[in-house]
Amino acid sequence: MEIIFALIASIAFGFDVYLIRRGLIEAPYPIVAAFISLTINITFFVTLSLFFVPVNLLKLDLIYLFIIAGLLAPGCARWLSYKGLETLGASISAPIVNSDSLFSVLMALIFLKEPINGTMGIGIMGVIIGIVLLSYETGRKRNKSIAERLRYRYLFFPIVASLFYGISVLFRKLGLNLMNSPILGATFTSGTSWLVISILLITSRNHKRLFQGGIKRFAYFFMAGGATCIAWLSVFYALRIGRIAIVAPISSSSSLFTLFLSYVFLRRIEHISLKIVVATILIVGGIILLSIAK
Image (cartoon, rainbow, N blue to C red):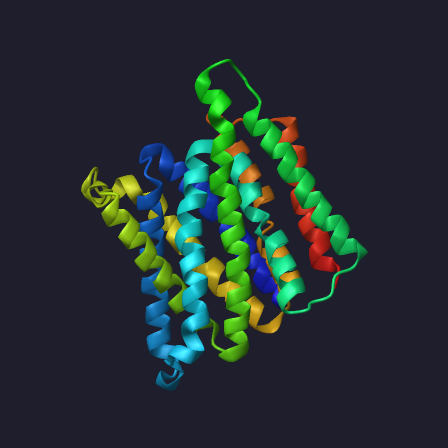
């Protein structure tokens, strides 16, 4: 059952990346995109909690792990991943962010003593090789402009986002081991993230952009928020009943789906080369190996 939940999350995350990338064309403000999508998330999960979560679970010693998870991701990680979408595009940024399962598996191996075998090792190598290929494609000069040569530095955004997402999964799993409530876990994780993004939005003075151009300009961000509601709820239910080494790789395999959407709908602005396709297949293939190596 955890595989089904993880697959649902993967598809929803794929839509999220495409919708955000599409929205950033009309409104190139990653911090605004993160704020809007997280506002949708927190509204959805608080509503669910009011109906389905007992009040006696609202104790700091039960929820603090979810608060830590929320600070990392989707809080800081979502802004970083959206910044990667803006600077690198979906076809390059999404597979790197989706390699968060590599960090999740390593965290589970170290702290939860989840076993690792040869198949998982091959999967990890596939993810690493795929990231290296994407890094090469990112820095390859398609012309001699300074802007192209500096694209290497933008790898910081998806790589750190991937790290934060991966570590956050560990804290979510630990939290669910203490409190068996995926809904409340998702509520406090998204709520903490919303506070982080709200502070960043105000301190960077980007809050004024929320009132520029009307709601229609941010329509894709609202739809992305709906997609991530489905994704995060599915992830938490998958983590409640399954191992990180299985759930994280499958839920992070959305980059292949994102690549397809980018090719169909964003081919005028997305550069999808053979190296990007091969790298994405290596990353997703590595993720699949990680998921079947139980």
